[in-house]
Image (cartoon, rainbow, N blue to C red; front, side, top):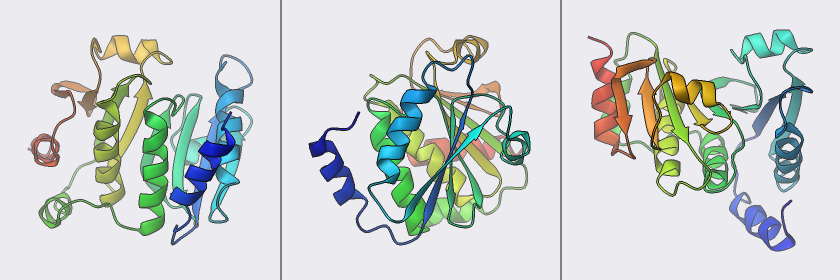
Length: 215
């Protein structure tokens, strides 16, 4: 899937990973036509850095592992550190098109140990008392979607109370229908339309919406 030129570029991008990162891929043998393609892509990526490990799990056979990470559908990618610590960073569906760069950026974030958020955002996220769930709906051809996904994933990495998921809308149409996704990116917070955000918003806008859920 990856050309030699792509592999060289990715190898260079991942050359300075400071810590190990584990890519956990949950697949299913039935009802998941994109699973083999995603597994192949992730295997190629993992082979481009000694700091990367790919672990493939069958959603239905490895039930305990899926339950541990709260995964109930396939295909799902969970990124963890080398100790398998879960930071709430999820990809539901293929990280293809523009979202492939997001996957690489998230790997670099995980390896660096720093969310890259501003000091003020970090401080305010530390004040969260209740769990926050971010669902970011995307399509592979959406140029504005990666920014929305990366920001949500940074929030999740920064706060143990935040979980953030990229959801490929065409692979999970039932989710897209449930949350009235007519355009992407769309970020749904705590499964509520009241806290939904359309488009790629700045860090401070997402922060205020996240904090609004704590009232």
